[in-house]
Each structure stands twice: as structure tokens, then as C-alpha cells.
Image (cartoon, rainbow, N blue to C red; front, top):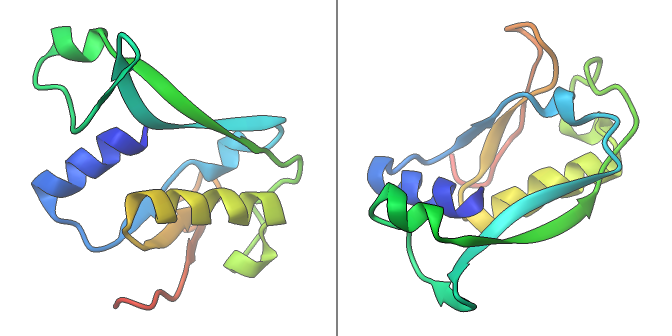
Length: 119
């Protein structure tokens, strides 16, 4: 949910993201990103201030292709499948914050560190 991530960034001001659990998406034919909210067909700008308001929103999704490959053995961003890379880059683009770390397996050490332009 990109809207929720943006709101979290407004509150917390993080400069980089750790995208975890990417490995559990392997095998899905397509992935959906929640990119916007609307109520009654009208766009909602910002994040709803109450649970009632959040419950009333319709989520606008962007669908992306998934990947079949097991990504747990990848040691660099470039070793990930192209569709996986595109998914990570799209989240980064929509959020406007670099994704520095990518969790690609269940273990604590199964993490890819990406070089980013804003260090």
C-alpha cells in the first residue's frame, strides 16, 4: 500500500527503505500495488484520519507481472529476475524513497544491499 507508506514517511522521515519478505512473492503470476484511494469515485488526497474513513476508501491498484524464480540465492540486485527488479523499482519510484535493502529469504542474513544515489 503505497499511500500508507507515503504517510509513514511523512510521520517518520525515513531516508531509505528495507523491503522485506520479497521471497514470499515468488510464484505469483501478478502482483498488485495499492497506489491510490478514492471514496465514491472521488480521489482521496492524503491518508484518512480515522478507521471509519479508511474503511470507506476504494483502493486503486496497479498490476505488475510476478516471477517464478526462487530469489533466495541472489546476492545482488542484478541477480533478481527482471520482473522482480521492476517491482522493486516501481515501489521506489512511487514512494520517492530509495530501497536500500531487500529481504530475499527467511534468514536474517538473506538480505541484498543496494547502492543508492542518495546515501
